[in-house]
Image (cartoon, rainbow, N blue to C red; front, side, top):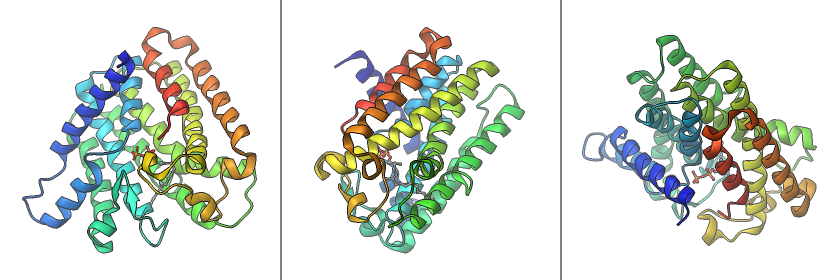
Length: 295
Ligand code: GRG
């Protein structure tokens, strides 16, 4: 195993423990809701957002014992978004992370509540203990995640996505949608991880630029994988975008150009880190991972 793969595995294992500790045990009431929350979050997922938070924390000299909680908050927002996205009113999917989706395994009302409760838990975590160098910075972290998840961030991007089915979006409109739907939370992961340390304004600006490139690259690759990878590899239903007549980078540009675009965004992400030197090595590796991933 490569050194980077071992680092990823270490972070993923750490996140499993941190998330498990934050999630209420299934033995306490309401048991079924807690069981479903744990089902939605634990034992799956690449944990890309936490990995970005840890890597950005390294740039800002942050203590991993702090970053892990900010990373958990972002991952819980992400998990909530997947649970709601899979529901019949949205993407209506039966498979996620290689297992039945929450509304299939439990029921729709439980899936709604799981999403609600995971979102609340994310903000509970950000408020519960000292994560930043001062209270004003920590308050800013709460604001950052709230805005990233809300109607001018991820939820807004999802609304645009739902409204765009069957419509011929152009590249600018597609980018606007993804900057919100996927990019906002990826940006929050990077900036929250950094704010657990002591980043300069210039470092934050560089990380912000990096995060925007990586967020878009993530989505471009997601579109390519949806078109090309098998369901068994993805752990979610493949080919859904075309089946649902959704505008994607692949439908607009074709697979070959979409792959090229992902490589260009990877190069832009690396360029954004040019002044950050050796401490940004993990972020560079993650840019490569996001673009090269096969699942
Ligand atoms: C319901 C408010 C609300 C928002 C949903 C993010 C999202 C918005 C829906 C997910 C739909 C989707 C497939 C988006 C494309 C990019 C994406 C977020 C993929 C899934 O993320 P991964 O690959 O998943 O990081 P894992 O399972 O590895 O965590």
